[in-house]
Image (cartoon, rainbow, N blue to C red):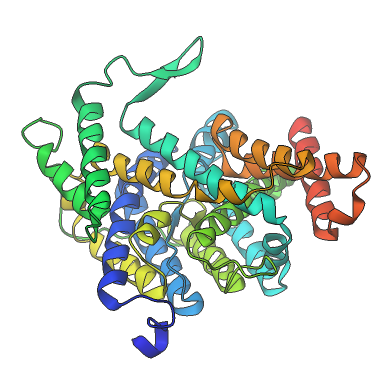
Length: 432
């Protein structure tokens, strides 16, 4: 194990890696309940999607572990599942089989792009200042998600968001208690602070009536298998291409952003700006998306919650191997993991958000052509509720401001290509 994962070289050990894997899994295990719930709105079977989610996540994360030796975990992405269920199947009245066919084709295209090093080139071409902004922006984004999951922040028709009127009681109060517990444990330098905090918060939630045993069967369900409808694709090829490219764009830049953000916390970004084992990481994402579609779930992507395990010291593929094994075990333990309330995992996301803000201090704020794109990258991730959109606004503003200012030498060829692709995406979306 030491030889394969190079634990000493990475400054870690078996105990730390397994603990990091447990932490990552607990902070992202909600996807096993949320993803089937969202896709069932499109007419899919909850149990089959649950199985597909667990198996596809395990396979993709296993590839990340064994091929990339990276501590990143993968699962069906939030936002992409909602796009499938509520936009493609809901607003556009397409079948879920049609939508999964688009996901499958997207996965195949990703495999080809990865094999040709095109996706890796995209990751490596992101300017250094923006890499740091992406990492910090993701931190703010997942902290915001944590506050929403804890019901500390709620919607408001006038101001869009507000401090929830019930932030001082119920799930919100439990999350705030968990946040203090985790912060104190970290201040005391307790190993496994985030994981211990999740467990303690879950236990505290029992007398509060928030943590409840959800019940269910311990017999693992079976997923779908090749649930595609190529006949419907042939009948409406234009809409299929538009839907497929939407999945493609969002998945590509969500993954790029997450990889950069997590890599900045593990010192995996080299001096030339490239990410260690980037191609293998992107390959795991492509495999996960393809396999996930075959089994019956939406696009699989690298999860920002991987940062929680990284914060616990995860540095190698042993962390992701632990996550992969736990996803498989989850097939048998749905009633147990499903009983951990979101109020117990939300504080972990907020804590990780704090830890991911550190790259901001190393950004160049003296040059407006560097500062503005970085700032827009961070702020749009939150207000647009999308990592991909944050990167889009960052790249667009970077190229435009640099070009108009006459700083053409700062713009590398791939940045121009990304600029063109984003313009294409905007125009294509306007035409649909």
